[in-house]
Image (cartoon, rainbow, N blue to C red; front, side, top):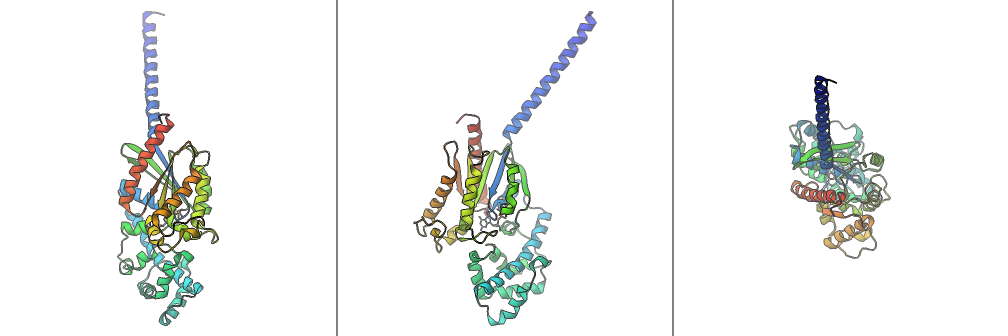
Length: 355
Ligand SMILES: Nc1nc2c(ncn2[C@@H]2O[C@H](COP(=O)(O)OP(=O)(O)OP(=O)(O)O)[C@@H](O)[C@H]2O)c(=O)[nH]1
Ligand SMILES: [Mg+2]
C-alpha cells in the first residue's frame, strides 16, 4: 500500500473511532437519563384518592386544568347533584327515614329517575333538588352515608346549589379536586421535579380494575400505596360484606410483598385524614380491629392503623415511609411530595449500594 492508501486507511480508522466515541457518549447520556428517570406507581383500593393526587400534580407541575377538563367536570358535577339526591332519597326509603309530608310526591318522582339517563341539569330540577336537600331526612341520610354508598363530597355541591346550578357555572379547582370519577384505564403524568424527570402512573383501584396492575410493575422507582384511613367503618362498593380498610390492608400486604417490590422502600399515604379526624370522635376503630383499645383518641387510632400496615409490609431489606395526607389540600400535597423526593434519593442510594 502506497502513502496515499495508508493515509486513507488512517482517515477511515479515525472516522470510525470518532463514530464509536459518539455512540458511547450517546449511550452514556441515555443510561444516565434512565437512571435519573423516576417512575412512580400509585396503587390502592377504589376511591382512596389516587387520582386526586394526580390532579394535584397537574396543578403543581403542569399549569393546572385546561378548558376541556373544566367542561368534563362541569357536566359530571351537575349530573352528580341529581344522582346523589336520588341515592339519598332511596336510602331514606330503605332505612325508614321519613321525609316531610310536603316532599313525599317529589321523593317518589326522584325514585323513578334512571340515573344513567340523566343528561343535563335543568333549572327546574335545581329547585327540586334544593327542596329535597333542605329536608332533615336527607341530612340524616348524608350523616349516615357509611351505611350505603354516597361520596363524602356530595354535601359540598348540594350546599352550593346557586353556584353549581347556574348555567354559566365554571368548576373551580376545588370543585374538580372534590369530584369523583372512578378510573377505568391508566392515568399517566410526566413532568420535571427540579432537574429530574418524573412519570407518575395511577390505575383504577376497584376490584375489576386491579388485573391491569401487574402490567405496570416493571421498572418502578417507587411504589406509593394510598389508604383511605377514614374508611374503617365503611363497606366496599364492590362487596357490601367487606370492610374497606381491611380490604386495603390485605391488598397492601399482597402488593408490597410481590417480587417486584418486596426489597424496595415504599411510601404509604394515609389519606383523607380530614375525614378521619372528624369521624373518630363518634366512631370506634374497634369495629374494624377488635383488638384496638385506644377509644376515640385520634393519635392512638392513627398509630394503631399505621402499625397494622407496617406489620403487613415491613421486612429487613426495606423501609416504609408513612405520611398522613389530605389529597384535596394542595399545600399539604406539595409538602408531602417534597418528602417523597427524599425517599426516592434514599432508594437510589440504596440500589447503588451506598446505604
Ligand atoms: N375530604 C377528602 N376527600 C378526598 C381526599 N382524597 C380524595 N378525596 C375524594 O375522594 C374521592 C375519590 O378520590 P379518587 O382520587 O377518585 O379515588 P381513586 O383512588 O382514584 O379511585 P379509583 O379511580 O376508583 O381507584 C374524590 O371525590 C376525591 O375528591 C381527602 O384527603 N379528603
Ligand atoms: Mg382514580
